[in-house]
Amino acid sequence: MREARFGLTALLVSACSLQVCRAAAAEASPSPLPDLFDYLTDLAKNQTFYYEPVDPAYYLKINNNSIIEFNGTFYEDLNGTFYQLQREANGTFILPSNESAITESANADGLDYGQVLGMSWLFYEAQRSGPLPATNRIPYRGDSALSDAAPDGTPMTGGWYDAGDCLKLNFPAAFSASLLAWGLLEFPDGYTAAGQTEYALDSLRWIADYFVQNHHADLAFTGQIGNVGDDHSSWGRPEDMTEDRPGFDLTPTAPGSDLLAETVAALAAIAIVFENIDANYSNTLEAHARDLYVFATAYPGKYSDSISQAYVYPSSNFLDDIAWAATWMYQRTGEQQFLTDAEAYNQRNINEEGGGGYIAYVWDCAYWGTQVKLAQFTGSATYASEVSRFLEAWLTGTSPVQYTPAGLAWVSEWGTLRYTMNAALIAEIWSQNIAATDSLNSNRYECWARSQMKYVLGSDGVGHSFVVGFGVTPPVQCHHRAASCPAAPATCTFDNFNADTANPQVLYGAMVGGPGVDDSYIDVRSDYVKNEVAVDYNAGFTGVLAALTGSSNTWAACVAGSYVIARGNLG
Picture 1 (spheres, helix red, strand yellow):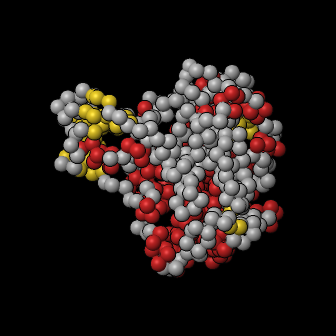
Picture 2 (cartoon, rainbow, N blue to C red):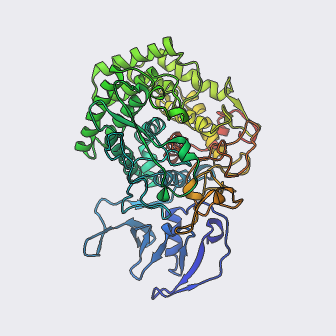
């Protein structure tokens, strides 16, 4: 059985009743949530095992009718095959005619990528602000920041807290949302295999609803909530905040083409996600995206020149963001003008802002994603060669990319894993794009992305995971207010920040900033450079997990085919 592996408490239950007797079980450090198929299989073997995880959100029980409840969802065991049930209003259960059996997650490379994919979406749920829905799966989170508003008083509840703090910053949030939607669109099979499509849709709707709310007048968009100094001078639960949280608007006299364009990209991408699921909602998102595109292009400027508190994520350009937005508007609408705009703004970005000079794909550099989209739309070798130039720099360690002794492609001391995972997302998407015409490089790029994920998850890398709640020796002191606080109503202050103990709450699925160039990393809460978490950190990471979950490739095949460059422990 699996209680030691998962850090769970094993309980015995009678096969004839729900009378429960506690059995002795060793406590273990926080570790991965169990694979659903394995969990249900263990229960069904003889109906004598019953698990109560440390996290009460993952409470599991079995009743006399072989119906198992897991996190509010019910499953039926039919001779060892499990199906998700639909619960009717009268309390009875039905099995939908089109329901597929739950199968064992792929464990290629000895890693359950599908499990981590699900955990990553749990992280985004833990970042939610505002009134939480009844389906909230994060037991230590509740309603928060219910007074957030635009300068004119329009309510601005909802959205995501940016990182380990409680600021709501739309520039990185919108970039993150577009990458998350892109990963879902490119790798739907991975989501299906992991059973995570509905959770992804729910989270994408959550953030899209907030962006729509931010657009509270034709030419007014709330781009940030919170004063950086006030926010960073306190430590506690989001639910307990008392400091002033001002809202900051973008207007014609305070423009922000970069932030608005990133929001356009996010809304258009999410509109595509929903176009065959909820057409009315999809059309609403497109309508806001159209209006914001006009706003962004008619009143050029950088948002960080307009919002005084935007210095946490200062922008260095905006033409790249407009080009990125135009590619998504073209994909959503098919209107030629958007493709024309995308190519024109992309060229202006190269000529006026040095686009393509920085070999990193991140919230302040949308250039590389745009090259992928333009290559896909036009078939132009010019754009394809730029994608190849980017990927070859990452594979070969061309400046600013360098390799750590253990094999991580590294570019920055601050939050380096986000850069690597965003590049890996480009690698997975481009690998899929060229698979039929260039199998050699398709395999090289996919295997490189796989090697970097193995490092992040602690397999064959430095002997520990960089993802909270997963793998060997995962982070237990990530820099995150809500996770560091004990269960309410106990107080939470800087004493909790300074405590040299594991966070009382497990922020499942959060990828921390990552190591130094020498693989150095200390799991300490005060290190916000290497041990903080953020919504943009997990964005590309989530898409790569979806790609790997849906892939039939394996690390063994990568090695056997000589598609990897041996570096450190990877290869």
